[in-house]
View 1 (cartoon, rainbow, N blue to C red):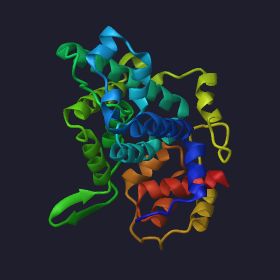
View 2 (view 1 turned 45 degrees about the vertical axis):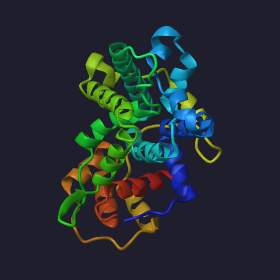
View 3 (view 1 turned 60 degrees about the vertical axis):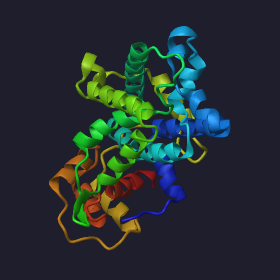
View 4 (view 1 turned 180 degrees about the vertical axis):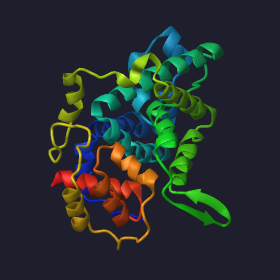
Length: 296
């Protein structure tokens, strides 16, 4: 089930996930100017080595390597995953999602530094560049919190609607073999530590002026403030379902897991059920339907 990109949907993305939007834009710009345009040697110029951290401590390179992918394929898969994982910002709010980004990046950087200190190879760029910390840290809540809404078989193999996200993650994880696997594993560990609520990190919040900074990085079409999804009334949900141009609704009753996922994001249970019916039990499509109700 596919959905065409349109300006309204982009505005919905911008209005409801400003931190993710700002992160994606930054990653794309850094990749274009420091990665792709760097030519064939851009991968080695961006990748971290023992010398960058322990001998010369190149702060600017640390920043570039945290955002810029080293190749176009990595950029495509990375941006796709970052865009998909915007659902977590919608679920917990922009402020806490900012904490999640900072925590996963900081912890992953510490782990990568430990890896570099163990090898102590000044001639090798052991770690590839890119926001692997955030991407693979996001796979932890994706695995634990996002339910499977569709299952299907292809040539005898069992797949679900989550399989494509996992396949994109595997492709990115293996894109540079060991150089990309190490940052990916560090990101998964960082996401797991956040999930375990180490140091009470899941309750932490940034000061308001810092959180609002991402909203000010908006494009003209988006609003200047971000917040977690508000409760959607049943009538608003019905209005959104009627105005959303999607395929004919399915008669299959939505799963309780899918309804619970939408309710946990702040939507009304009846509105969530109607949206899931109209979206043929596709949680992502139903989320877009309900979020569009807020943009009217």
